[in-house]
Amino acid sequence: MRQEYRVERKILKVSFIFVFFISLLASCKKNDSTSPDPATQPYSFFVAGHTYGNHLADNIHLHPPFKDQFSYIKNYPDMAFGVLTGDIVRLSNAESWDAVDEDIASLGFPVYFAPGNHDVTDRKLFEQRYGDPVNNNRSYRYFNYGKDLFIVLDSELDKWNISGNQLTFLQTVLSENAQDSRNIFVFVHALIWWDDENIFKNIHTNWWPPHIPDTTNYWTEIEPLLQSISSPVYIFAGDLGANEQATPFMYYKDDNITYIGSGMGNLVDDNFLFVQINSMGNVGFDLIALQGD
Image (cartoon, rainbow, N blue to C red; front, side, top):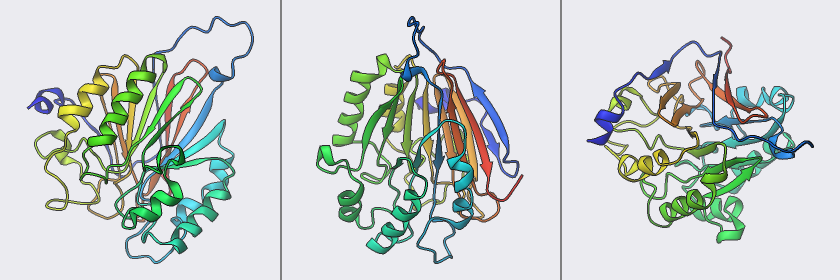
């Protein structure tokens, strides 16, 4: 299989050491303008997964240890927006979503949602509240920020597969935007690259067989699409770190694609991360431990 020979490298597992900083060089375009260009100003965003927190808790607001970081998040240098990578609420009902909206409003900047399985137990409600209003409230979207492209996907539409209309959407967005983008950031809840026949089988998601698919169309359709792009691609998933069995964080780089998984809820190794893009388009990460070092 393609993934068996493509993914024969090391994977960086982080279990209990959660404070690190890694910078990756990304391709950048020369700015020939002599005046300041807003598109080349540095900016940051945060990414957080499984933000309802612990399975056994009963909070309807976001995970309390995560909320305790809100002041830090708001004051982080060049903070522009955030992305929640799924399982935002424990129960998808109006009360829970109202509580999340209240929490998000206190940040004072946009936060985008990549839905998880908990979030779409009432899919109609999620799409009515958070779907793309320009496209019939669909649960996936894209946007541009600066000179970078951001794509928010829904892994729950087809059992971790990006298929049908969503696959067409992804192909179209990349065809129309990738060439002019310094970096491409993709957000999804499930680790759609997980496969029980490649090195990722050693990563323990918040779910485990037989509750997760043996494989998806990632390696046959999505990965070749992303590999064909000259720009760096960063793909984030949020289905980790919710229980004692789950891997708290993963990082893996394969050619132009960087895979990052994170999450919270086990109350020991909870984490989220900041992503920084400097004026040259270089990308750096800052992993934050909610329980300290």
